[in-house]
Image 1 (tube, rainbow, N blue to C red):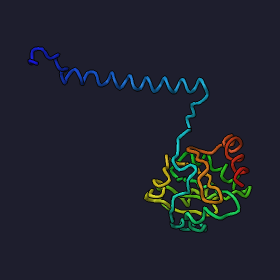
Image 2: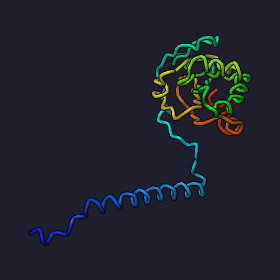
Image 3: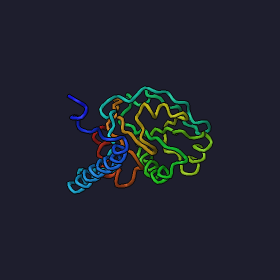
Image 4: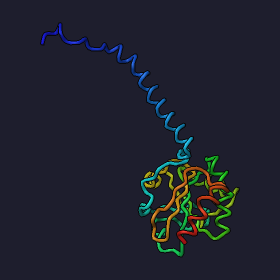
Length: 194
């Protein structure tokens, strides 16, 4: 076949002009899928899937938060208890953490074991946060470099995990816990895995 009979190849310039159009089409398809999910009720804006649901919590050992008067936290503390525990990742610089803190205090007063991980937070700042808002955590570890959070697949702070008494992750909530979240999601699960 001669070069004269081949169809002309699109120029590089033409391909560069088509790239934004392709990106806009992909974004439009994603937006359409979101709207369709909203109309059927299947779209959950907080629905961040976790590959860890139904699997044992990752192994870790964290140092205690100096001055917090709480023992350190490790994966061994998640297994063999009388019931489920909550692991809550928080930070003093996190505004939604302030919003959810009263819910954590309420859970702790009800006897739910809440275990805390100070995520990428200066120890003095985390301690000041807890002195100001109260300490709901039975155990408290610091993850200053964020390595443990990576193993847990942390999406951001705050984030809370429900761990059953065998150490298996049963639930994950990305974002602040609210009264509605407690009533509709968490409290039924706490009873189920008690």
